[in-house]
Image (tube, rainbow, N blue to C red; front, side):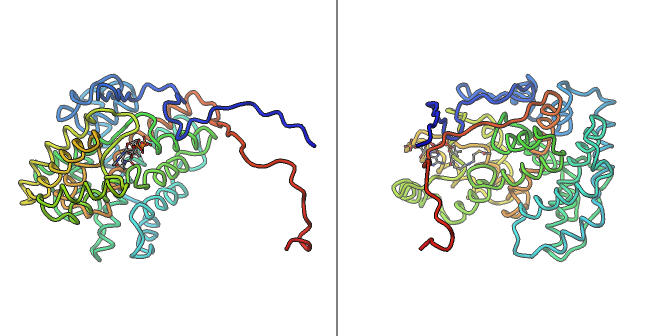
Length: 381
Ligand code: ACO
């Protein structure tokens, strides 16, 4: 009999509470319901700085000067246009494929066309960072145009990232309130500690894989309904419920059957997610403007019912669903819009990982068998 040294190991399911990296990028204070980007409270950033300023902050650990911001904005806008081959690849995707699958594959394809594809140096990575941030919203908008059999639009150099995205999506520049709401949505989703997709990005980066590979891993990880995929399910739930008077029965029925309510609960927040505070307010305003008050009312009633029944709070995905719907974004694109914003955080973390790297390679507790007798193929019954 073979001897096996078996160290008693505690397995932390889902790595809950495990501290796996040092970071300066963002801090999620789950007990007090606070979120900080590079030391700035999200409540101070929301509606006072633009998404572009927040991205600069996450990438440089300081806010830009007016000159730096103008330069950064024009660099991003100048690189929003996609290589023709990537548009062609998007056109070739099956019409039934999910936008997150198209985004995941497009980010991967972009890597092969990137002029710095084989260069993993600091300067090349900074260039790739700007290009990727710029290209992802264009992929999402281009796919929407292709699916509607409408021409893919080039970015408008006079518009910033949020307004450009809505312009390329709808074919007309958004009005001021819509552009502002879009910018806020992007800002609020930009980074969030060591969440699952960011962890995936850092794991890939820790092998010294290139930035496009790490981002492809992150997009795939965001897709799941326990992470960024929840926002699409939220709007489906709102449509499914139909009216405020049906909310109580629906929620109690779902909970009694042991189902989770999409857009609720969080691994870290044990109180209100500060991003939900801003998105709730924006949802109310935008739903009113769009004549969709009933969707906000249903959402609000769901929030009260889930809180009373389970003591859990809405997360970022809950009110972002109605905000995106009111902005005319189709539900199957919701998670890819989230990705267009979170790309900022993923990139910041990838750069941070490259800057002080050690391979991320945890271990597992083996609970299988030992010493099994090998039966040759011909004798296996
Ligand atoms: N609806 C009903 N009950 C819930 C919910 C929910 N949305 N979320 C958590 N709970 C309950 C669980 O059933 C569990 O109860 P129990 O202890 O009685 O069994 C308890 O709260 C703890 O939940 P876990 O699933 O163990 O918490 P975990 O930290 O593993 O999961 C997660 C967090 C995945 C976000 C979970 O809350 C969930 O599935 N929510 C719904 C999906 C969702 O909205 N995801 C988006 C998260 S935000 C983001 O990623 C961008």
